[in-house]
Amino acid sequence: YRNELSSSPNSLPAAISLSRLEGRRGRTAEQELVLRNAIQANPQSPGPYLVLAISFLQRGERYAEGVELAENALLQGPKGEELRITYVLLANLNGRLGNSERESEYSRLAAQLAEPGDVER
View 1 (cartoon, helix red, strand yellow):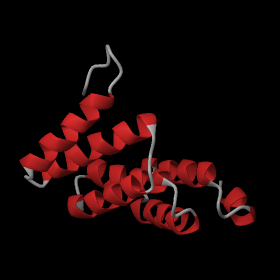
View 2 (view 1 turned 90 degrees about the horizontal axis):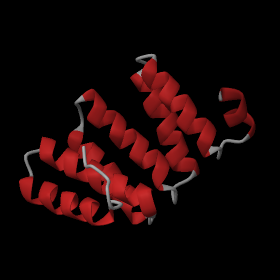
View 3 (view 1 turned 135 degrees about the horizontal axis):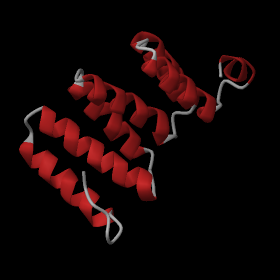
View 4 (view 1 turned 120 degrees about the horizontal axis):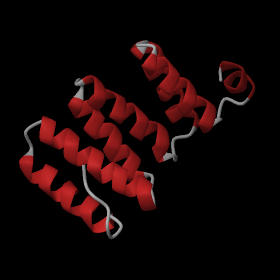
């Protein structure tokens, strides 16, 4: 992934894959650096904002920053499942911050986008 990013710095698949690998290795600083570089290289793509926000939620830290990242992802116009994931993420992060009104609102928006038969987790 690093080789691909050195020759194609805008490669989102390589950046997302490398960030996930770094996260699994517990190398959170490296994971964050890869994602911040991906955001800088692809500011109109919601993906790297979302992956970084998800990493904060999974690590149980920096929830407010995660909300900011997810809101930035929302500004980039995610569609379909990516939009639903953004709303679910915002609901979860706001819940962790104790903002139950925003948590409920984003949960409602996510539920509106769920496919019939989907079970919310």
